[in-house]
Amino acid sequence: MFYTFMTRVVRPILWLLFRPRVIGGEHVPHYGPLIVASNHLSFIDSFIIPLAVPRPVTYIAKAAYFEGSGFKRGFVRWFLTNLGHVPVRRGARRAAMGALEQGAEVLQNAGAFAIYPEGSRSPDGRLYRGRTGVGWLVLETGARVLPVALEGTEKIQPIGASMPRVFGPRPTVRIGPPMDFSHYRDLPPGKARRAIADEILETIQKMSGQEYAAEYNDRAEEG
Image 1 (tube, rainbow, N blue to C red):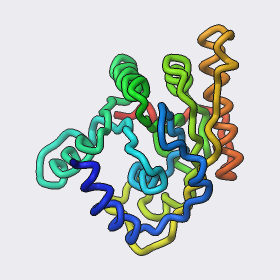
Image 2: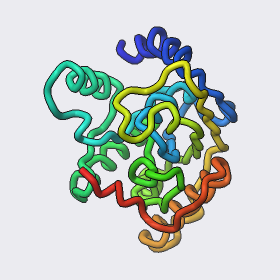
Image 3: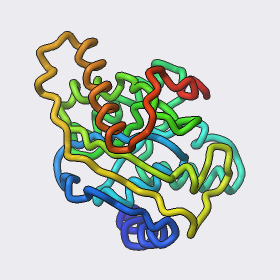
């Protein structure tokens, strides 16, 4: 019921406010397990991508978004929970693994699960080295990966801004063809996870045109 409400009421409102340009929407499979892997520039990314992907998508979200008191925090917690977002505390390996396991459950039920392989928002617009959790999900579930490249969302809500700018710069969502990694199954798991993450980030970099930073995003370790 909530997703129907989001689709029929909230989605048109968000589309009017942000007016995203979607390139490659025809690549989105309407059925079957799907890992949506994207670069990450702004908090608003998790609201922009669902406008371009015409099916329910479950996200990993920072645990802090689910915590705290007050009307604003309560609304965000209610909103994210009803969208199916999975809380994860960054820097806690066990918690992160638990979130990935929940993602695997979504995929095993033929759902779509979104992940930011960089681990957190880019602090400077560069594309950072991908973490191997996305590779684990691929090997665990056999799901294909939908590469997504966002552009301009950091202008709508920069890091540190409490609210997004509406009717401002239009973001662009580029969607590539689904990627299949079944050919990596014969590699040792650790090597396969690394190779999958690297190939996904390389694909996103080609789509986004971002400068690639051959290092991890340290923001991913923040709480």
